[in-house]
Length: 413
Length: 121
Image 1: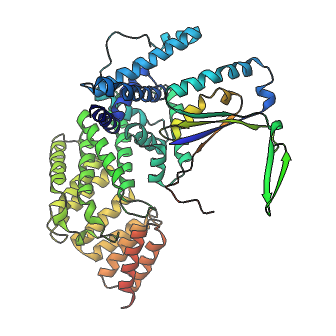
Image 2: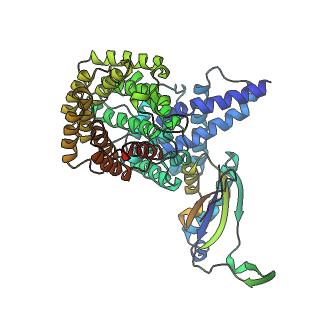
Image 3: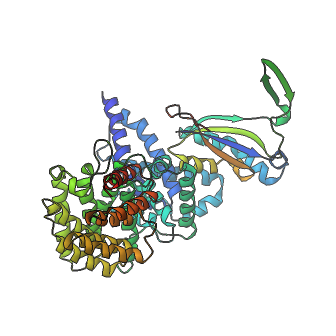
């Protein structure tokens, strides 16, 4: 029984704590590769000792010190054979200290700043974060992103080489550098969530694991860095997550906001998000994530699409557009405008965004245009727009939705 | 997951008696021992040179055997190390520690997972 308990404790530790143990080992040993090996040795030692001696009171601290001592012990043995190595070890300051290194929450934060360092390619930041902090395997990341495993493996190998060559430190940036560096971290977390939320080509529309991991990472950042944009991102993800189950029906088809069952939205997550938004707004520094969260929050408070505070939403988009002049934001504002002032004003706004040219290949822009035309009864034009939208998406659920809409406007014109 | 690390090299380089080659060869046993100790070694399969090989084919129920390797190349498959690793990146990291990787190249190939459908090409 105690053996079984020890084994279960070990499995549980691996699942929930290996990320934290790895993060601390990276700090105390100074490299990903060495930490990876030490992590392996620590769990091998635990598999041998826990069933015999019992589960330690603090498994994480036990694993960290086991990994560290095993590594130093191995270095010493190797150093006896080659004095060069021992010099290297001393240069790196690897002489064993008498006290144990305490795993601290900061270590995961240091690691995420390293994994999301601007010197690394954006794709590599995502792969590194999912593997080193999320504990996902290279193959799992590859499946989630629908690319061959060697592609992901190569990104990780290159990123680690870059970290080594550029001596990118494992540290939380200084207050002066923090906002710029935090932006990259938040962007990576947002992209991970997005990939889980709206698969670009996958068979199902949502992949919950990536969403859950993104929320865990956002929480971690919020706990340790008290920045309004971090709060804003966490709130935004919580609000999307709260509505996720109502976004697709049992057949896997898209359900529009106006048809979603609002009673099934996760009110606890919405309340948590609201608390975060209110706290963040007191800082008087609003960024794009916080504004998007505030917009999403207005949607969750409304009893229906018709009774949504579109005036307030358009106003928030106006502020957002001043910070982030992206055509996507402009398109979302145009759609909100269509709700506030009617489809004619909406169509004019969508056309002006499309006139900019940047969204010509963006399916949703044509779908939004089609929707305004449909509401105005201009069905022939709506058909053309729905067909343009269809040509630009491969996502099966989106395609089915657009095909249904096309059929609805198809016969009356 | 299990991975096969296929070690390819030019025999003239590996057995050419250079100091570098001899050093790498002398480290092979210690590397295998370290991997075995950490539980990551499933099996090490060193191979003799292709000069010792026979190649067998069966066509229309008849067996034919030729002497020599399946493909004649300068770099030959010198052996394989079967390892247990968390994922492809850990496997690549382990493969980088194989001493002969310094002289030749190591191809890392995941073993087939029979719970997945066969590839259709």
